[in-house]
Amino acid sequence: MNRQKMYLKIVFSSLLRRRSRMLVALLAVAIGATVFLGMGAIYYDIPRQMGREFRTYGANLILVPSGTDSRMRLEDAVRAEALVPPDKLVGATPFRYETMHYNMRGLTVAGADLASARKTSPYWRVQGEWPEEENQVLLGRDISENARIYAGASIELEIAPAGGRRFKREFKVSGIVSSGGAQDGFVLMPLRTLEALLGSPGRAAVVEMSVAGDSAELALLAEKIRAEVPGVTPRLVKRIMTSEAAVLGKLRVLVYLVTAIVLGLIMICVGTTMMTVVAERRKEIGLKKAIGAGNWNIIGEFLGEGLILAGIGGLLGVGSGYFFARTVSMSVFGRGVALPVFLVLLTLLASLAVTVLASLPPVAGAADVEPSVVLRGE
Amino acid sequence: MKNILELHDVSMIYGPVKALQNVDLNIREGEWVAVMGSSGSGKTTMMNIAGCMDKATQGTVILDGEKVSRLSAKDLTAIRRDKIGLIFQQFHLISYLTAVENVMIAQYYHSMADENEALSALERVGLGQRAGHLPRQLSGGEQQRLCIARALVNHPKLILADEPTGNLDQANQDTVMDIFRQLHEQGSTIIVVTHAPEVASHARRIVHLDFGRIVRDVLNTDGSAAKDSVTGAISL
Image (cartoon, rainbow over all chains, first blue to last red; front, side, top):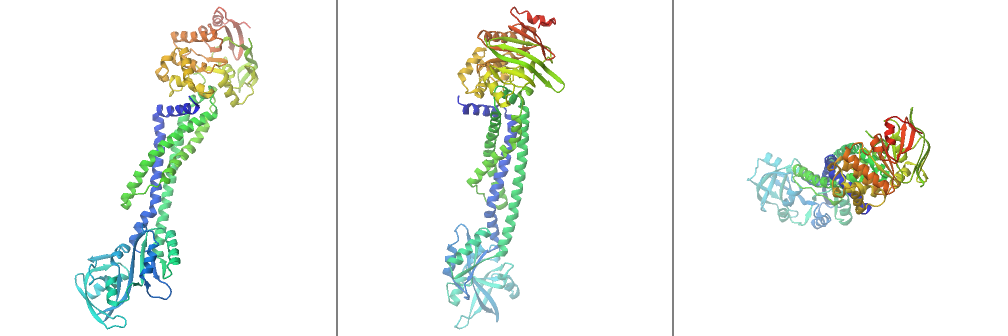
């Protein structure tokens, strides 16, 4: 039997035939690996998960016309959109603003891609229905309250196209929109309807984009758009991005702390278990040294046991850690969690490193055992 | 026959306690020597020094022609591995290894584990059928025989046994002494440390220790020298 085979026989026999003590250490490593992988998976996925959550707060990247133009060409906006990875683009909504009159009073009418607006501005609350036909509009809450026009009623708007004759058109109010922002004072209608009424199609005053990604990714994207689409100027919505970065930063620190504390506790647990194991096996160590084992034999055997425990515990921890992360993610974010391969490898490496570090002091003590002392007759 | 072990003016002093005092002893190859004495007489201390498990505080120890008294712990481990077979009163077997694996581990630390050779060693002590048993599945006598098989497997120059029958009943004691007799006949050098005259009576030479000194060193050709110690006879 070669030396490696005999070494493995010694190490595995020790683990398998002294199960009860080793189970404690195995459990400690497995729990540590569970928390490490679980928290790691959450940590890794937080930007994605929280990024999706933050998208409910509205657009985080605005495209405005470059230079002194008051409107951009929609084809430029489409080119800019194409620079966003498809899996990152939540939505892009072009807006065109015009003034119309109701009862001699000027109203801001926003023509928008309303289907897209539902994605970029999910926080808008609509009482009634979203417009589905060309003669339907959404009325801002403030206008609705002031003019006492409610969902289901009609509103007659006076339209003055540039260089053309004024005319009136009646629209059905399909719903009342409430956003807590400027939209509460707008009349919102499909962009195509507005273009049909006023001409100059394919133009927008602003395009609101909602992009999943952290502030660094968004800044890069903005740079790219600025460089490649000169007709539009990208602007980051700092208010959203700053809040997002602050929340993510705090969550990450929390995950760091919890993971560090758990790893520390696991080191103590594995270390004390190994200390107990070494203390219990002083006679065995003394005997091995008496029959010719060198210090490196003793250290190698104990570390071998530790590494096998770490490997098995790490693998168990990967499985249960993924389950833990998935459960947390499902209950908090309502979505599953990604499990990158590097995190699995990192968990296994961390299990090995923590076990070796925790085992080193007691194992070094094992090498100091004097056979003549521990084997003394009773 | 050349000397396999030489102790020259060896002393072992632990603080105020003089465990061994100026001991001189030569043991030739193939000898079967019993070291006798009461508790605290220095028997185990002498065995630890002879077995390279401890270093004398004074004097010279030569084992198989090599001066070992000033060697490092690492070198002493190598000497134990290559030249000494140890047998203990408490057997000191590794609980999670089977009988054959307990023998193979001594081979493993020495050079290469050879299962067939380990099985042969077990056969020599009558444990061939118990090779796959764990120590807890063996009787006290069987455990001691396993301990002997482990001590023999690397063909040591010197076999050191510390109270080898201390935990055995008469039948097992006889079996173990029979094995020692066979080993002696095959040319092994054996030192048995014991306080039991009936165990010492099997040896061919008996060394008596008292208060860390050799007080008697006699040949035991007819088995009567051990009995003399019971009556307190001293002959130097």
